[in-house]
Length: 190
Picture 1 (tube, one colour):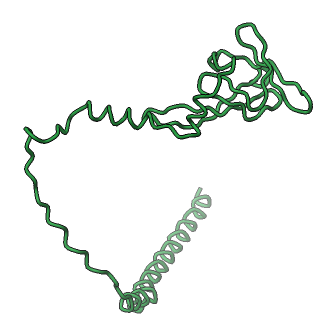
Picture 2 (cartoon, rainbow, N blue to C red):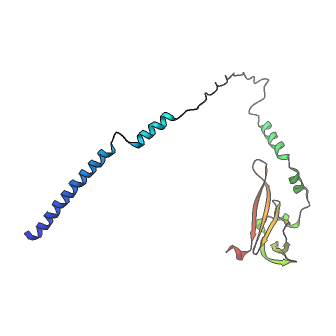
Picture 3 (tube, rainbow, N blue to C red):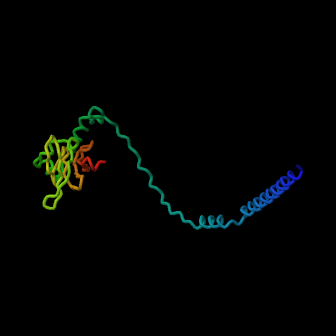
């Protein structure tokens, strides 16, 4: 039993010696880092001395002169009628391009919502792609440039199993914005 215990004791002594050397090396390394002539520190100080600060003084703020509000003769700042009339006026101003879009003759597929339409497929007619669209148990041939849907949707691209539209709709503020929509065959959705 004694012979088995001696190698363990020798290993413990070796571990202690390694630990002592490690602590000594760490202490030596820390003293080397705390040298008073650190090149990074001296470079930082030199750059700080050479830096030129070119700040201009801000102008004095303008003095605020409060004005008295006379509720009897002045406009009501919380008048909702004035605000709604301004919004209506802004929404009635339509660009010439949008006016032409709104005043054109409507096509048959514009009577239906885009969600009620089903794309049945595509075919080629005189070298051009034509989409087959089914709505209300009727089949329509749609080509690029045709209109469909209730949001002024104009067909801009027809591919195998898919057609893309450019719709023009009013946003919450009454502005006319463009957005894209698409219609796909059931096979291409999978």
